[in-house]
Amino acid sequence: MAEVARRTNAPAPASIPTPSARGNSIKLRNVRLFNGKHSEVTPFLSEIKRNIEFNAASFPDDHAKILFVGLNLKDGIPVEWFNQLER
Image (cartoon, rainbow, N blue to C red; front, side, top):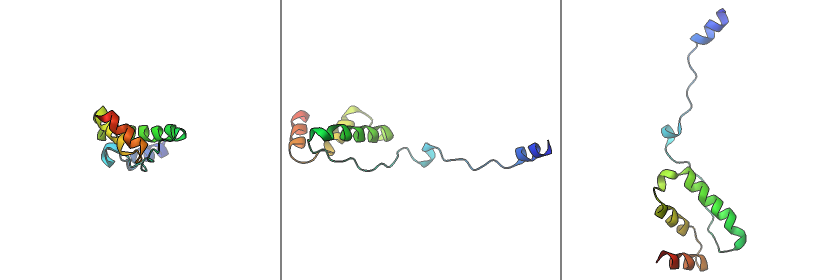
């Protein structure tokens, strides 16, 4: 019993910082630029989705999400396609 009493009187361990204490976003590696290749669509969209989910405060609406995708398109056909849709 005395051992249990000593354990309960011990100071509480240092708390682990909560996400709000560390900041509202997690630093992830940069999203790869999408080059327009069919084989790269799934990995590109997965990275975009992960970034948006982990940094939700940075993307308050769909327009911000769309612009983020557009910023990660490689010059050439992907950007031309995006620019046509944006009009």
